[in-house]
Amino acid sequence: EAQVTQNPRYLITVTGKKLTVTCSQNMNHEYMSWYRQDPGLGLRQIYYSMNVEVTDKGDVPEGYKVSRKEKRNFPLILESPSPNQTSLYFCASSLSLGTGGLGYTFGSGTRLTVV
Amino acid sequence: ILNVEQSPQSLHVQEGDSTNFTCSFPSSNFYALHWYRWETAKSPEALFVMTLNGDEKKKGRISATLNTKEGYSYLYIKGSQPEDSATYLCALPFFNKFYFGSGTKLNVKP
Image (cartoon, rainbow over all chains, first blue to last red; front, side, top):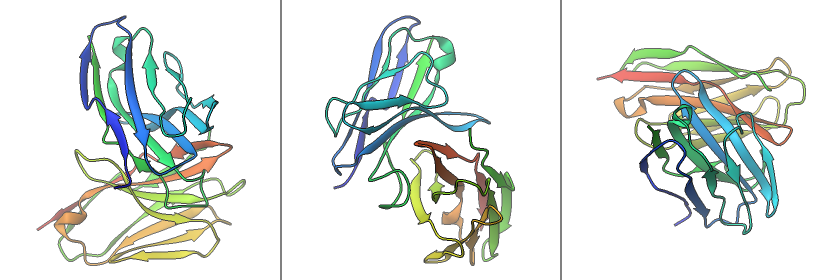
């Protein structure tokens, strides 16, 4: 089954404790991205990757890191989480940026709470 | 940053009503427009990818149109059903980034 696998679904952590949210896709998609969703603010792009070893900042990258060492994996790293990073996170992948394929396939989401 | 606006913010209709909502965007540098359906406690799912001015797409009772010259797209739902209740998002790629509107939340009452 074509899918984006994102883990964990729920995570409660303490301020400053490094964490990684994993994301893996099995569709050979080139474009992958991380979003956070906050009430009233919609989906905002954190980082994106056009292909292996090619990553760039979205609109809200502060406090986050990513890597793309293999085409299928795109982990999101919070080196020192803070309470303002409490949010719902989505990983998504797409065959291309816009005109090709069927749009984004989203992971199931990670509800992160930083206390 | 690309300003993507959706209206209305929310909509309450009765089962069987037809409804439509709007996605507005700057008409310059248009590349593509996506529509997504997002049910509560689930992940967004792609409905349509539209690229050409005048494009019309249809999936069952849901259809969409695109006007790139004036910068808008309409999403139509014919004969709304309770299972159509969801937030409908539009999104556009812009210089390698991707921008979502804040969505239209549709509630269909039985």
